[in-house]
Each structure stands twice: as C-alpha cells, then as structure tokens.
Length: 339
Image 1 (spheres, rainbow, N blue to C red):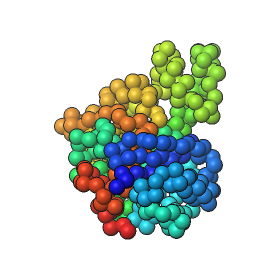
Image 2 (image 1 turned 135 degrees about the horizontal axis):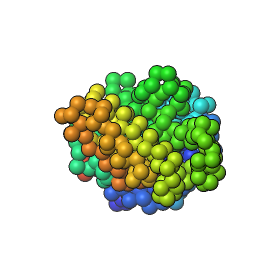
Image 3 (image 1 turned 90 degrees about the vertical axis):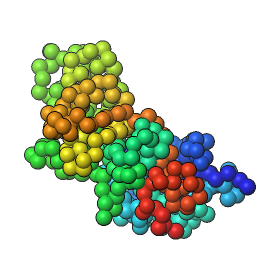
Image 4 (image 1 turned 30 degrees about the vertical axis):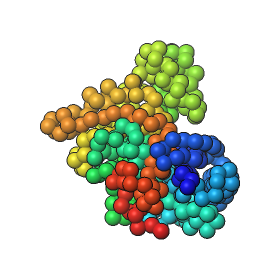
C-alpha cells in the first residue's frame, strides 16, 4: 500500500508555491512561481491545474489524496469560492474548488492563507502547545487565523479572521482594500513604504544617512534593506521598525480585548525583522489594555517560516478525508462535511 501524499498551495502577494508533502508534513518537492503570473483568475486555475497534473504524473497512481489551497482574501472554504483578494484586484467570485475538482483525480479543499498557516503552526510550530491562539501573518498585507479549542474559527459567515482590516484611525491613509487607517495600512510591507515615503518627503534631507536617502519606497527588497540599516543602528530605520511594532501592538491589544485570547503567533515575511519590532510591540501592549489582561498576553515568533501554510494544507486534507487520526482534533470541523 502506497503512503498518502498531499499537494498544498500557498499563495501570497509576491509568490505562489505548490508543494508535495508526506503525512508528517515533510516537504518532498516544491515549485515556485511569481504571483504576477496569476493576476487573472483563469490564469490561477490553469497554473494550479497544470502543476497538479505534473505532480500526479510524477508520483505513483493513487498516492496523492488531496489538494489544499491557501488563498489570501475573502474565501468561502465551505463552497470553494474566492470572493475578493486584496493583492489580486481582478479576482471576483472565482469558483476555484469547482473548476479544479472537475479536472483533477483527487479532492480539492481551500481556505484563507493565514488560516492554513495557523493550522501549520498549531500542528508543528509555535502554537503546538496552545489550544487557543491568533496567528498574524505580516507580509504584503496582514493576514489572520483565529484558533479556538484547536480549531480554526471561521465565524457564521465563514470570513472571520480578517484582522488586518481592524481600523485604528478612521481618518488615516487607505490600506490595501481602500479602507482608511487599518492595521494593514502600517504593519505590513506597504506600511513600510508609507513610512519611508513620509520620511523622505517631510524630513530634513541633510539629517538622513546616505543609505536612507538612497532607499526607494517601491523596492521589493525594502524590508531587508531596512533590517540591514537597523542592524547598523540607523536612527530612521530603527524609528520605522519601532512604529511598526507599536502599531502591531495596537492590533494585538484590540484582538485580545475583543476575543479574550491572549496568545499570538507572528509569522510572514516581515517576521524576520522580529528583533527590531518585538520590544516596541511588547512595551506598547500594556498601554492599550487593562493591567490584568495585559499581563496575560504572550507574543511569539512563528517557527515554521514560509512552510507553515504548506504544512497547514496537509492538516486540512487529513481532516477532510479523515484518513489520519494523528492530531485529528486540530482542524476545523467545517472541513469534515466536505465530500
């Protein structure tokens, strides 16, 4: 009897990855593509379909037991529909699950990408010892996955967890979806661009370091360059990361105050700047909460890096197909009703 294998897709603002994993979450093969190649919904479907068939041909018949898709934005996991995605403005009501299921020899499942990442961290990563936690993914935008009683909380409509769109300033600058003053407006890669733009336009240019003056707000490598400058104690770079961390703290405090969940896992590409934004975040949280509840807050860095979403996809398939009892309590009951 062949061992079950799992295909999972993790789609972000800059890249799309399709991976083949075993039942323990070990990545056996992964292929990466630019997100620019799937700006149209039909291109996304064609790419995933084509690559899934390639993986299927390269493995023994019957080994792949399912495909799970982690998609950013408003995702109806029950009916397999992507209604809207902040990084893909041309996507409108894409029936992704239906389109792929019609042409693939194994079941297709899907969820919001941050939910999928939260499942991965809860299975093998920073949340593995917690029954309840919230994962925030910091990247092009801010995603969120809410885990309650070791299950993803989707809410009655299926769209819970959009923490990046918490409004911190009703008159603030627009975020990815156009809403003003959101957490995502500042605590994301787009937020770093805004901060740098403000510094370059409004500061005394002669007081900025040569390296800071040379930065381009639209540079895709901006976070890495700001980390490098902060490492060399550039005051403006340190200020940017301090503001980033304090803004993140406001989002964390808002979530904790509403949900009564006090454990947070921080992942995504920008988590690599942890050493520069964590302390400002930690110091700011008590200023936004009651003393008693603030003392209960734990904020930790994700452990799985960019593998969290891929590994979380395995849990979605395992729960959906009921083929594995290992850790079977960790996953959303919504998946158990799928066929």
